[in-house]
Image 1 (cartoon, rainbow, N blue to C red):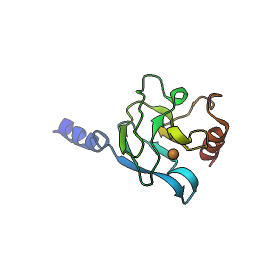
Image 2 (image 1 turned 45 degrees about the vertical axis):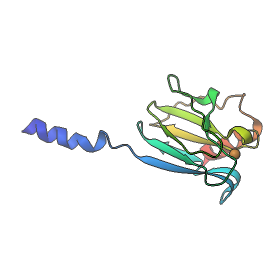
Image 3 (image 1 turned 30 degrees about the vertical axis):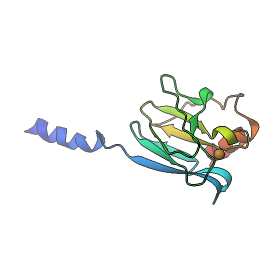
Length: 136
Ligand SMILES: [Cu+2]
C-alpha cells in the first residue's frame, strides 16, 4: 500500500507533458519578423506548436544550435509544425527565409546551465536577437 501511494505521488511528474504555442509573425507586438514568444523554457517531453499565424514563415532547427543526439526538424512555409523536445539542452530555431533578418527563437529544454556560446555561423542580426533573449 505504501508503494502504491508512492507511485501515485509520482504520476503528476510522469507523462504530464505540456504543449506550448508559438506564433510566427511578420509584424508582432515585439517587432517585425518575430516568433512570439521568442524564448521558452520547457521540460523534456514537452511539445511546441509553431503556428503560421501570419504568412511566409516556418520553423527549423539551427544546425549549430542543436543538442547532441537531438533530431533536426524543418517546417514547411505557411504550415504548422509540432515538435516534441525529448533531449535537454539549448535549441536555436530559425525561420528559413528570414534567418539573416534575425527571425530566431531559443528553446531551453530542462535546466540549461552550461550552454555553449552562440556559434559564429549564426548571422549577426540573429545573434543580436538571441543575445537580447538570453539577457533578459
Ligand atoms: Cu519568417
